[in-house]
Length: 577
Image (cartoon, rainbow, N blue to C red; front, side, top):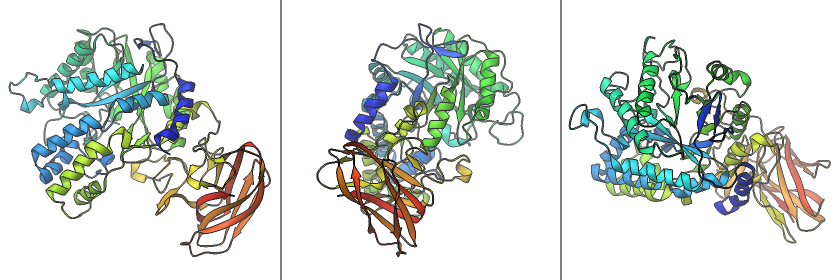
């Protein structure tokens, strides 16, 4: 589905979830709620702009490389430092533009979280001309100014997130571009001083901007202080340096800015609040991050209890990297407690977010060279691939939209209604309905599959869509020469389609299937008795157009369901003649 076809879906979401664009109110903490200037509760619904000002390897198919500085060094090895800098400048110019923010607003998001690499705004401590002083990069601040203008034009709030603090804040190296050969944030008093100074500078610049929703001080601290080993702080019972630094940052911000909300994050990727002292400011929010776990009350019981005990709002500052089922259930869970959210990320190379970057073929060769012993590209080949990625592939107009993801985040938590994914209009002539264009909606209402989410995480990854392409439901989809098809269809799985018929009448229906063994599918129209399709054993390689027979369509809206009674097969399409 292209951007044009997405228009109707976006309009429906926007009408459901947003009102007219107005000047943003100041946000503030009021007891356990975030409220606007009139005291009305606000649910933040946002996306993290990951990969823009800070790259993580996995988002570029470069998980083994991890940190941005490692990726940059590999690029320099191929094209040299000047062309590497040209690549990064083009990347920053094109990754996120006003078109991305305009689209987010149309879809129904009301906020965004900007992950900032400190090196976009100031120099590393070991490169400062004068020790203990700070050099400021005005171009980096101006880039944030530009994003803020786009947010304001759309009536959205921007949350600033220090994702990579000076020195790096954890043993999960990639998320903060940490170089373990150098002092970390926690090892260096100078890195901590620079972090405080950076936040004071940001607050001084944006003190009078209500469209800045909050300052998220340190993304996902993950560090052992008292516990042994290079852990991630999950067993820490005090985490005193985490709280001391965030208090010091708060005090520096309040010297120049008394109005903005300040977001704190605990140790253990933002989730360990043990040892947190009495809250030191009356406009604080506690963030937590949620990945790959159950979506039940027990999953958020601790943070809800902490919220109520400390009388402070909480915010799901990061979540995602899962299926539409998981997104829908997680958002319904937290919004049921009045908690807002920012999911991760808006775009990457991959299928399970609103926008997908489709890299040029030359990028695949670079990935193969860096991660899989592929041949070394020439400097010219590498430069072409890099600049095509940075000037074309990552731009909004060349991204692949995933309307099913936005629908799962913004509409489905509030509605069980099933919506068409594509416009299937049956006129006088034949209609071919691609199997992959089944309706959007909850599992069990729009589709059914044997596996629909990941509750284990990357170490024991179980993919809900085994093909990892086209859509983000549990339905398995594979790419074939002629396009995407529904794959790995097994007993009990089914798909629903909405058909708009211009007139009532009898039509001949068939389904295009391939199967290695005997198979039984059923077809039902408008809830009627299912028609059985028995397929003799095939070779698994040949598509067969399997007739169902003649069925009578109503004028207007019709629903058809194709289900597997006995199957290990692929389905390409439904043909109506």
